[in-house]
Image (cartoon, one colour):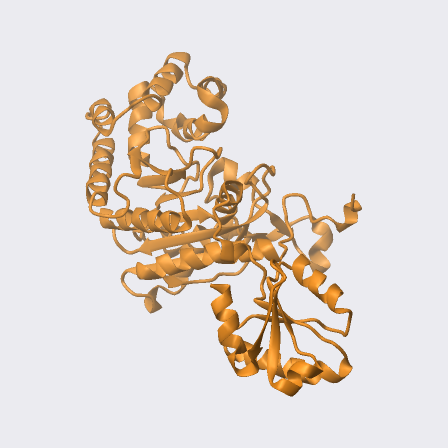
Length: 440
């Protein structure tokens, strides 16, 4: 057991080479898909001013913000002026307000960076983790939600997922169902926090939490009945038909479902009245990705037409979706979904070293191979050939190239397959082509 001092902080992780390769593989696919939809890259600082973040995430979110103590002469005051970013959406809203005049009418961006939350670590839940965000700014059309759902579906399918669902709901529909159930408006926000935990604490847990939050027993029972079971869009629409805002929300959801039938999201979207998403800045449709064997979601998002206005002074239409890289990796690891090339080592061949005299020629050969896109590792010192072969095996390098005095004199290189033990000599000029062919 390593000493406590060598471990990373709780909820944080070190990433060894095989972990980084898997992460880069997923990030590469996410970026590629988002770019095909016309989204541009954006990065923002890890630290934000504390007032930028506070008050944007609701009562639960505010408790999870990592605050940074003031420094220098203010260090002993215990005051905070900075915080690690909690998500990528609020920083985006700040960027829109700051650079509005430099951005296009419809600004579409993707952002893949780490965020920090002072949360309780659990399976697939960490205190530092990457989010893969995609957002569209400037339009109230339901085409925006449809394209976001389609892009997310393309990402997940490209990664190998087939059994996921995009749960769909609307904040106005949620409010309407609560009102129809008899929950007074002042308790709506508090009730939504409880409903958002339905998949974690179950029906009885939600009913108990609603009661603890001041919701009357009859209303709590009506809420549970309205938000669980096989409730369709049409049924929900009938419950809120007398409420204009909720009725408009139903119509927007119907548009998203209808539009999605023409996209790659067809068959993956399902209306779910229990989907609440606790963040307080959502104003319209909300979405979340569910897979059968994961408590929680692979990601989620929604429309937040009022958030940018907190910085700009006027509302700007906005909608986004965030995929959780860490949770995707957890599920893909458990299901063994990574292709073989991702699991392989970073080298196609190990160049062995017989003695000091051969080192210049070995290094020259390494340069020739790398110039032709062959991944090469050079054994760094003369050693017994058996030890070099054993090292290659521990690194999962499938082939070793031997360049001794005899090979140099003949203008050849010996290649050894470390799985079968077979050897072949090839002309030095043909080595790169031979290795590439063997790697296929």
